[in-house]
Image (cartoon, rainbow, N blue to C red; front, side, top):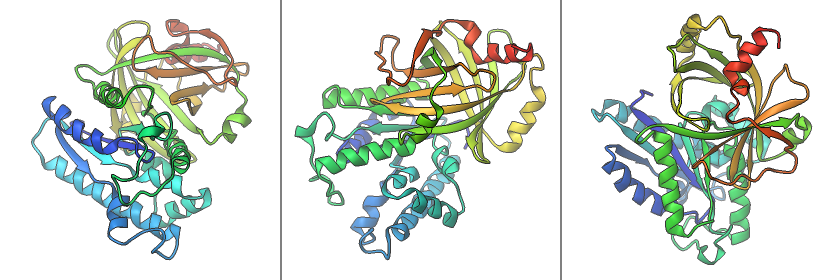
Length: 368
């Protein structure tokens, strides 16, 4: 899609606050100059229309119908957006195609992907950002209800389990944020708007991140976790003006990849301006011709991990056998971080330039 259009997903467990969020987003982002387009929740449409897992021949048949309809709806909205003269367009999807993964066994989901003729990476990463609203059943149980949606029948215990599965399904997306119930409902809605605003770059696309040098992780453990997803990354630095860092990235797994171009300008050790655009494969290959020959490509396995509503990225490099890098994006510089006990911190390296990927690329080229 063109740079003026951003497509995001608002997802979450049952009774997470999506309906209220949609209403507030309409007025909030319209005031910021966006044309806001909403893709309604497909599951609710189908179930209310009589198409449901219990009316179709199988759960797989139902999930296939839902994903196909979701994809068609999004395509129509994207084509409509391309015809609009507005400079800024925000497409908001009330749940996305990957939500369906939470309602299927892994082999069932793989079969649906084959039947539709797509793959998980292409489906998941077609969205620019994913914002998960945690179910009220986790941390605000007194407010949990299904009375506002006749298509929902889950108990609080079932809702909490589904919430975990949806977070796991989206884990691996480059821009996933989890909005919990640590504040009251109004605070939760303000947090969501703050996260989306920051993601869209209003007024500027700041990214606040902290980076830690960690002991080499237990790879088998990470791969066994439902809340962890491995992603293969190849990162190439391009020739760029002083003060800017320009890179292109191939991101995906097992032959299924998407491509990005990123421009970074450092504001402080912890904060930078980051502008990212999706590329076609041909655009990506063309930009590789402008590679900075003083740096080698960085190849790494990234383990995307959700833990206590935080989103960690653990980068494992082929030239290190005793250490790795763990990174987390934050809403603010003073946010608390809770690490799982299987991540062993050596030291924080947020402001240590020698651990930036661009520096590691130079180290590798020098044989380090």
